[in-house]
Image 1 (cartoon, rainbow, N blue to C red):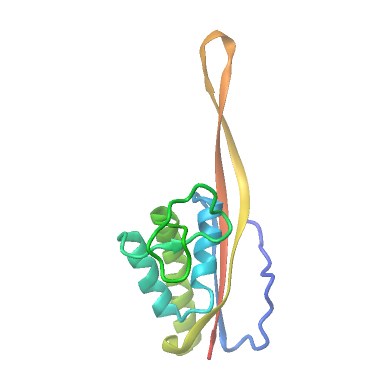
Image 2: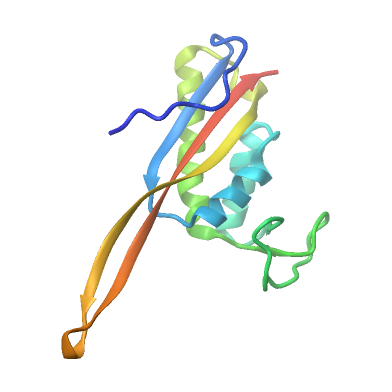
Length: 152
């Protein structure tokens, strides 16, 4: 596994916890919108939010990737979706972040997500053979998600 550097450098290493989900098979666009939605929230609030997204009870507002996205009843934005698969993978990363904070001896009730970013990973290229010597490409795009939480 390659070493991925964090773009955010915290001021105090002792009061922060980090977690990375490396090359997960989720949509990059969905991961970007989820990371935007949970940044700035407390860890337990973000976990509850993602659990509600997986259960189709809360909507993730789509602010950048919003073309042809249906309107939903959201308090702050008009376009939104329920990215269940991406939310469940990012929820696992959030649980790892909380476990890393507990291991460091940090108070998990005061943890605030200060950095949440999705990055494009590698592309696994496959080809499906078709009739008359043709082939159809079938690509799998992977996504890396990084999170840092600080005690506030």
